[in-house]
Length: 290
Image 1 (cartoon, rainbow, N blue to C red):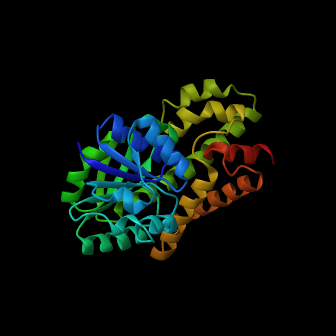
Image 2: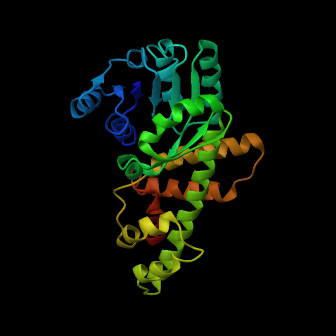
């Protein structure tokens, strides 16, 4: 059993922290910007909560973080009362936020100076993956730090892989989001065509999902897409945040990402329709309302 801190109890962090307690048996202290949620988590799991990130991280062997973006990450690490002010030497900070590779390298350099380990470890699998403890975790960092942290990360994951040095986890997550964006747009167009032709979408997907067109998106989203249900899953706002990171990285590297840029604009249209919190599969709604 390790002493663990978890910073950020959103739809992902809340269950992830829970698995660290229930599956790992670790001593977990949580922090959340909205204190009531941290108090609720502590009451539900019979553990403790802290008033600041620094208090949560004090004395911890592993400090996990899952917040919104680069600015949020800096706030809870190097900001006033941030976790980096209290982490003990030899501890490991595991950042599950989907953020830029640049901020990962920035924070890793500070961690190195202070004598503790740093891993950028964004996750994939969405809210359902977090709630079921089956996330995929893409990690950037050195081998020794990864080997130390992997058994703890596995409490909420079914796949944990070291992708390379610090920043490689975030770059891998960018590739993941680029693939998803293109897949969802293609699936939306296919379903839109099939519905306009009067085909039974469930029957069609039952066949084509077993061939080369099959994907997680097709298997898990075709029914709700066919029914026009989008009040679930990974929000459009979150996907646009992630795609902005991808496009910024592409620009910095002189890499063209034309499909990603186009789908990002399609998601902007969904936002204008009021679909900010709709699942990413709502690209179909955009097509059907034209």
